[in-house]
Image (cartoon, rainbow, N blue to C red; front, top):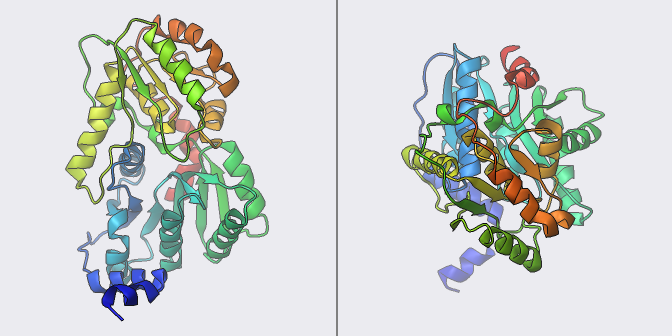
Length: 360
């Protein structure tokens, strides 16, 4: 039997443990109080990069006497033992926010559970997430694993970023008083474009089409065609873009440039049409009018309903309204841009998150 055949016989979980053992390395840490950000994005999803940056900036504002230490998701298994050996009771463990809780992105959920299990003596704060689930056996099993692992931790705070996820989490953990569920906006909305490093443009021009083509897409081929025709009929130059740039194990400078370049690109447009949650949020941060369409789950629709209702530069269309999209495009094109130093929500909306962090 050759080596390739032998490798196929080794269970995936064992392969991961072996890789972590072989690649383990020490991680020098500050000597004072530390707040960790686990699963920080070092891959080319600009929405997740924005979350990582905004989460770090928020923690630095709230925990002024702590050193904030980001642990890149690709390095989690390699540095975890080193951190476990150095962890103090006064340290806080936070886990990145986003939309990867549940069974849709099992590798990320597995790492989140690994972090939770690794620090039983420290407060765990899961930053605002969307939980994705359905009626499949796979999804039900994923939820069972989440409850089993999270409920064993004596001091864990899990924040939802929209009310549908919050209601489901409250239902799942109804019997566990040690699991504290909260509801706050996506952490990127605690920031603004200036803080995240974007620059202004001379005069906005053209329209950005920022539509996804992955497993979270909800648009049909016919609806894509209707959107493209309505955009072409405006007479403006149409540029296709995305908030997913690709790549993995990217250094911090590369990630920062991806984020600032995307914000600047959004700022330079007269209008952005998107079905990505952070396409919507980054657009609002940049001050650019935004036409938003649904994705395959509830995260965009419910974020808009919970936190952004009545925003002057945002229109959300349901799938059945796309036939009338031209009218909404014309309306949004007539609007002026906002400033780059405003946040889409009041910072007071994060008070419950702040309480979970400072009450140590």
